[in-house]
Amino acid sequence: MILETERAAVCAYARRMVGDGLVVGTSGNVSVRAGDLVAVTPTGVAYSSLTPADIAVVDLGGQVVDGSLKPTSELPTHLSVYWDVRDPDGEPVTAVVHTHSPHATAVSTLVREVPPIHYIIAAIGPSVRVARYATYGTPELAAAVLEALEGRRGCLMANHGTLTYGDGLEAAYHRAQQLEWACRVWLLAQGAGQPSLLPPPEVANVVERLRGYGQG
Image (tube, rainbow, N blue to C red; front, side):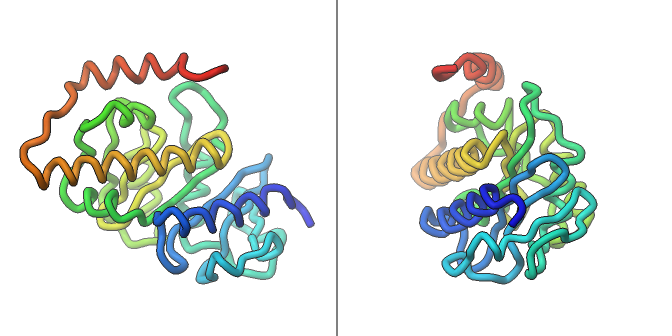
């Protein structure tokens, strides 16, 4: 079975999305790129029952090269990210996570950018845009997401959810969690009063500081 390790990782993170409350049912999707091939969750299959053999493998043109199940309907958006997105720091783009996380989805209906309620926003970029609404699975949605991702590692999708990417599923998934957390904090603060927001220069400052963050 080709891309066995990548397919197993896609299964694991798809289940994790459910456990962490980032999706319900069969919503959301996950993919990993390895060379010119992409392992991606299938459409309409409960994540609890997924096995590595169920994970579709497609080429960068979207043709299925292994697996008996159809890939996610959001495949055009995943492939657009792999073709066209450039990480702000030049890191490889090898994983995409798309969630329907509730707080982020709620925020996507209220604003055009995620309010900078916390410096964790800088893990995505100098701001987090909301991609304009388009029907799921369409080229129009892929184009809207690409526009919102310019210079960023994630975005909200209006009336839909979130999309984040990274060099590996761990990085992409962690950004999805951070984005959901920041949106939840803003909603909680907004419900209690008038939140104090960080000025753009401070978010830009944290973007720079995060480049040297960690043990690397």
